[in-house]
Length: 321
Ligand code: SAM
Ligand code: SF4
Image (cartoon, rainbow, N blue to C red; front, side, top):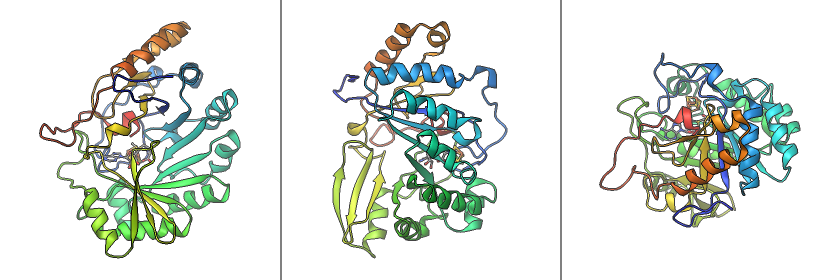
């Protein structure tokens, strides 16, 4: 079992298979050009998988494929199948913008993917275009329908921002609820790559907006997710992810692997250690030692909230969120 210096069990690995993306979301990577990591520096799926076996053997039981946009990487279904075949009981999930999901959902499901989280910040085509930098909504919504049709469990992520999509919090909840999908509202996390001047809607404000229309109870954290959950009278559950709050880091059970093989202990900080050399040499013990060191050095908390709040210089498209 992997346990960090603050007694948190680390059993969740997020793997970013590419930093590239077909969107340019304002809160993530609005600017182009910047230099992508050259393709030859990326670990192959076989190499990533070698590390994942180490992590699974050390106690990781939940893996999420993310990016950039993970569906941009060819043969993703084969990668998913490698992981599934190694340990079918792994909670195997993916976070995607859903743009390419329509043609791929069935293959991903057949390969062993269980769940997906889809980013839906708006249901208005023009707002979607303003946020993502291109006309994306039709493909995204069709991708979601396809995922539901093939039997994937789907959760929705929304990042509400003032003056942009904050007026759609109820609409996105209703859209998700009608389809049996839980929605999580994620506080916008300031970072050096986001468009300047964005203002997120804080958890408290989301609750105020929802409280005007619905009655719900606060279930607190479920221990497995950074989200605080709320249950409405009819049993529907939604979540709020509040990285600026005190409790967010107390629940943290995760580390992140980038497509280049950097293992990152915290979403906020720049620190990372590479497993690439060990894996390329076939040095499994070396990779396991890096994994344990990264877990050992996991910081107690991020610096988004509090008096010494700063802007993170970690890119979301690199860590996978
Ligand atoms: N491209 C995929 C997607 O958008 O779902 C996966 C990668 S994306 C980096 C993962 C998650 O990070 C998405 O739910 C996105 O909304 C969230 N995200 C990105 N930048 C963020 C920011 N600055 N604050 C809060 N959430 C952010
Ligand atoms: Fe791409 Fe996801 Fe970042 Fe948007 S949030 S730019 S879809 S990686």
